[in-house]
Image (cartoon, rainbow, N blue to C red; front, side, top):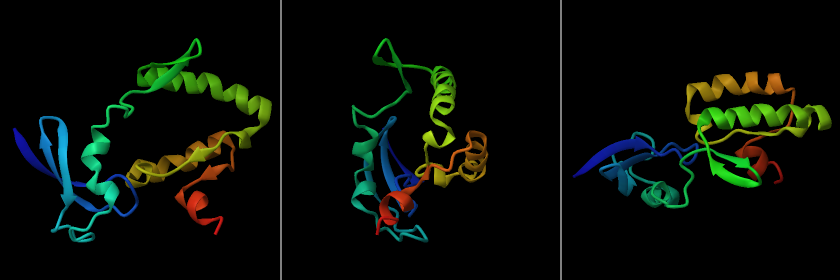
Length: 140
């Protein structure tokens, strides 16, 4: 059974309106939402390919943790535990600035994304912060 869902594209900061065609749990089509007050039906190629991106068989759908030299599926709790166990030795050996934080999509689309990064950065003590601006625009 096919249905239509109106969503905001999570792929960049433009937050374009999407009209998605959904069959079951699978996105089978994406086009711009003509009634969206900002994008007025216009979307980029990433938004138009949203169904293909969402349904890509190589897309990660669960955290991966390296065990015995191999990446294996894990629960979120196992993934967070692995980060907690691995980050302290890095900071102790190389200092707090050896840990980099990348902020971008979809982080910038949530209230939590605005509230928690400053706490994370302060807790880590790192100034190694990267965003789309530092990666794409600062070199220019």
